[in-house]
Length: 411
Image 1 (cartoon, helix red, strand yellow):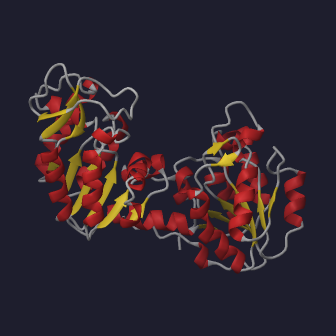
Image 2 (cartoon, helix red, strand yellow; image 1 turned 90 degrees about the vertical axis):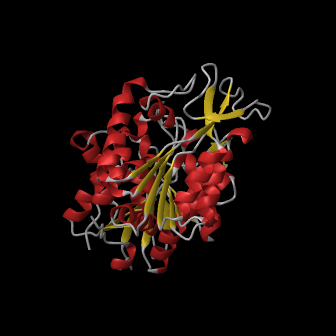
């Protein structure tokens, strides 16, 4: 399933109005941006279109917008940050209607190389509705502002929203290009194609709290990977499925049969499915979560005391997992090995992160908590690729078709 999509390098933006769907869903505190990672990630595509002489119209959502349009979720701080980073004014259309008269006038006044940022797309409730409802109207209005469309918002690409996928129908209908930006291209190259056509041995590492969140990912990666490593809270459901005592550890009793099926499937396919051999346990979950004085001990994974809760993999497991990574040529990791927010319970996650950092393999971090963990540990720059999408990268690993990716033109 090689995904060969048209990119910003495959058409000329000169003199064209190009609508770019970005992911500017940045964290804000008192109206100030606290982390500009997503803005920085969008710059290469924006700069390329400016350099080509395009008229660059940017759009994005920010927040969940549950109480209707409001200044707290306005993209005004993003316009300010973008202006500083691009060294030129980014004209911000503050109109809550997003595509109204103010947007039309701002676009009409554009010269080649100019940049306009539209208001938060979720200020229009139609953004998130099903295409057959009012979403089509909003998508058509967005398309009316541009000649070509570029999706560079991987973090939203698993949503069939008006500004993500529906808009392409209207742009294409008038002969425009529908392409992906550099950020999307990188995600496709690494997450999409590396999983579908990996250099082997291919090791996949899954962690996090619940088996239920990763059902389809486990199933899909067992088909693709040579070794599947399980850690985090989800490991205890597998351990219980093996008949082990897991004490007060997190468990999803409804998924025990599923875990048995997956272990049988791994055996049938001749794949390695690695589970923790030792576990770091405590009397209960840390409160507060980062409490550094929590008392822990390490026990064998088949003998967790009834009054203890497993909260991280143990040192023998960390070594076992690190050895599997050393032998790999491609590694995908999604989900921490324990309660990594706590310094005492971060050792398992840190040891996996270090193993990836020291590896010569292509190392892909599947967004969310794993991305937060490697960045927090200062190892982000040692990874081949850190995905910008949590939910989107999980769905990619499930083998799902992402609307924002599939809506782009094929080369």
